[in-house]
Structure formats: C-alpha cells, structure tokens
Image (cartoon, rainbow, N blue to C red; front, side, top):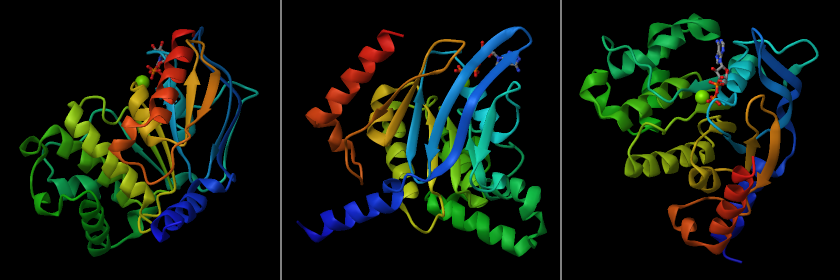
Length: 268
Ligand SMILES: Nc1ncnc2c1ncn2[C@@H]1O[C@H](COP(=O)(O)OP(=O)(O)O)[C@@H](O)[C@H]1O
Ligand SMILES: [Mg+2]
C-alpha cells in the first residue's frame, strides 16, 4: 500500500473511526402550537463525522438544527445531550447573513464580541478573524463590503465567521443551496478540506442539504428524515474513503449510493 493511502486511512481513523458521541438526540419531539413538527427523533451524532440530513421541504430539518443549537427546547420527554461544550457549536445558514455596513473582516469579528470570546482583546479578535479569512482564502478581500463580493465569496465569509470562534461542531443549513453549480462544487471541496485540516479544531459537521449527490460526496453518513411530523427514516453509510474528490462521482459505488438514497426518498 502506498504511503499516501496509509496516511489517508489513518486520517480517516482519527476522524470518524472513533464512534464516541458528539451530540445525542433522544426521543425528541417538537410541536409548534398544535402542529407536530418532529416526533420521537433519535440520533447519535458521532464525534468527527461528516453527517448530512436529507428530507422533504418543511419536514423540520432547520427546526432540528435550532434544537441542537439550544434556540428551541424539545417537548417534555425529549433530550439533547451535548458531549462537548455548547459554545463550541458554529452555524452557517443558507443565505449569508452579513451586515452590509461592515467589511468582511468586521463581519467575522462581530460574533467574537459576544459570548465567551468577548474577553479577547481587539488585537486577538483581529488575529482570529484574519486566520479564519485565510482558511477560506479571502485574505485579500478583508476590507471589502458584502455587496462588493460574489454570492460564493459571501458564503465563504459566513463560513469564516463561524470558524473564527474555533467551533468543534459546525451546523450548516443548506449552506450552498443558493449558489450556482460550479461555485457549489468548489465550496463543497473547500469545506471538506477545512474539515480535514487539523489546524481548524473543526471536528464534526452536520449539514442539511437538498442535494442527494452533495450528501453522498461529502458525508460519512446520511440521515433521511420522513415527512412532517418527521422522524429518522433511515441512516445510510457512505462507502467512499477520505479524502473525497469530485472524480468520485464517476465511481459505481457513488451512483449506487445515490440510487439507493433516491429510492428511499421516493418511498417516503
Ligand atoms: N417558529 C415557528 N412557528 C411555527 N411553525 C414553525 C416555526 N418554524 C417552523 N415552523 C413550521 O415547522 C415546519 C418545519 O419547518 P422547518 O424546520 O423550517 O422545515 P425544513 O427546514 O425541513 O424545510 C414547517 O411546517 C414550518 O412551517
Ligand atoms: Mg430548512
């Protein structure tokens, strides 16, 4: 076996080979008024994995992320156990929510002013923000305002903003859904490289997506949610090794997995 192959297997073991839990969602239901949105969701998110969530529109995927973040509480009887500190969770939304009157670097620094990192000095915040900008390859655009940047660049700023606080868990809610196909593909790979990069501290990624292809290319496991009131319908393990690359989309194992998921989604 070639050294590179051995190294990539070792890095796989470091990431997802250990089955320790990052977040456990137990028996979790959520009702808005009289509308049941989630019913008895049970899911163990493993430390170090890249997990995607697929499901019909309106089934409760964003609601589930908000529960994980602690912005909502489950109905009585449900429980969400965090095996790490809650403030180690970052989030990226579908649309980059950037302040138009702040520059790229100022947008990244903004959340560092609240929460546990607010004790940092101005200089330390700037250093963290610059490091995050560098990770997404936008150092030269630090002084640009959001409207001077493309959609893809704005979403990279949002990712940098989430990374600046050095989260171990990153939740992403259809982060690339609003982007064109080519930009999306590029950002998919950038995100994977960030997740693989030991210098980021980023360990676990949970990504909601509409794209079956994207979920297969990116993830270790794919959670398929049933229609509302949603529960976990199936969990599919993706039999592709890491590091992933776009050429893997040509492999039979790739489209067999896509086919299997498509079939399950149709039967929902
Ligand atoms: N704050 C809220 N109050 C009432 N209903 C809500 C609220 N947020 C979401 N919903 C409803 O909950 C359901 C699930 O929404 P959501 O989690 O956004 O779905 P998804 O992200 O899977 O498309 C939808 O029917 C939506 O209308
Ligand atoms: Mg949603």
